[in-house]
Length: 119
Image (cartoon, rainbow, N blue to C red):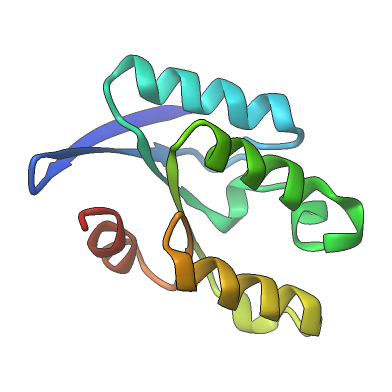
């Protein structure tokens, strides 16, 4: 895993670079937040492929646990992916509500992620 730190409008944003699943459990997310924070970045962009598939099954509780940590530690997150393939109404509602408040963002492109986190 590589963390690229970019600056946009005076804000540092960590962009995770990897072809592997990086977040399999809550501790993985905490480690990424700590690594990013070490570089002064409290806004993080990850790709959907960095998350274990169970993350998108709300019954697993993994998404709730992980995203609560981002909220607790005041770290903004943008997840880049194609979320239209998920048919679960509860997941779609979850994504809609998350995007409404802006702490956690589900977006379709890296550019959109940068734009949302630069605010």
